[in-house]
Length: 236
Length: 236
DNA sequence: AATCTTTGTAATCGGTGCTTACATTCACAA
DNA sequence: TTGTGAATGTAAGCACCGATTACAAAGATT
Image (cartoon, each protein chain N blue to C red):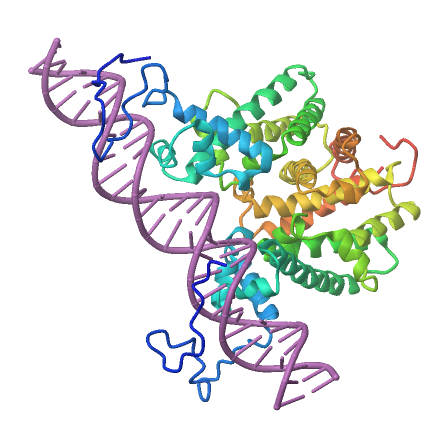
């Protein structure tokens, strides 16, 4: 189009040395990166960890990967696509830790498992606030899609849902409406994690040292609130 | 129409036309805007409402105010400062609605007031998700500073805290640790609002039509969980 | 070996926050 | 009324960003 029609193989090189083909013999920077996609995700993960989702720029990721600003667009059609990949990676790590924690939980006690789930969830969220932030915003991570794709691994939200449903069936809850309990439980845990991310904790006099204990206490308080014999109206 | 004719009509400009002083006689666009700060905040509020905090750009706000891109920086030293002003405006509206709702609450029943508070909080948050988002992120709004500055108006977080404390003193709670109840209540409500903002509700099968009812139900569920005679162990 | 596909680079576009130099107007004092 | 300094607008420009396009290099396939 408006290209000035670069000179054909014009023999000598006047001024523009025609992007380095030389060196290479010992410089060892191959034209093709090898695994740029992976490296870009790692760089972006690091950027998220350093300054949150907003601190991720395609150019900076490219810079850290030692590659030109346009290169990432060969692997991700947009910044958001890169963020999606980052969110998936974060979710992978998140799930791994949750499932590991759940392995040590009592198998016969649904409410106990729920407690374990909640505490592990909060621990990870507070240790990796920026990564958690990426996961929890639906903009970058479609939980449903993720659940459908990796069918072998249980989806986390569904796990919580099912655990509470088991407790309900086992008569461990006194509420009449299971769904309300599930959503309330979710809201409580999610809200606590979000409060931590959004910097509410200092306002509530909870320091970094005590926040983990407080998380466990709050989960316990909730469980104590919903636990009880399954009666139609249990207002004491 | 402030200053009538002051510039001579001056016919042709040779080379440098010396930025328009002409027109004005009937165009009525004064050089000074009059209340640019206010208009910028309004424009930014509108942008937040349309596309969330990320959709706010100083230039677009200037554009909507009909002013040059650099003008806003006379009133706000940075984009963040503008966002702060927007957050304060949002908080003002938020507080107004909450306090109005609280006026209709039973004065003698702390738990009833807490319920009223929670429901009003959630209603506003879900009707103004983007504005709520700005308020809740500590990046743009310092709740403590706001509390200190406008001392006559009760701060909202403190209001919730105090209401629960009254319930505690009145023996309406069965928990031993008031602070845990306060934080749990906050986490629940905040988490619910955040879930709505972050688009979790569809995943939980809660449509836009039912979300308000669900909000009230969840608040009630929480209250039922913490209510009871103030005994060391009240497990019925 | 020749060719097609993949994956890199270079240059460029429009958008952004923010700064600087300059223009205009306001408010207040002489 | 008339200066004059402060307040507040414009214009131009910087660096950065996401994204696109034309082109170059390397790998893969036949």
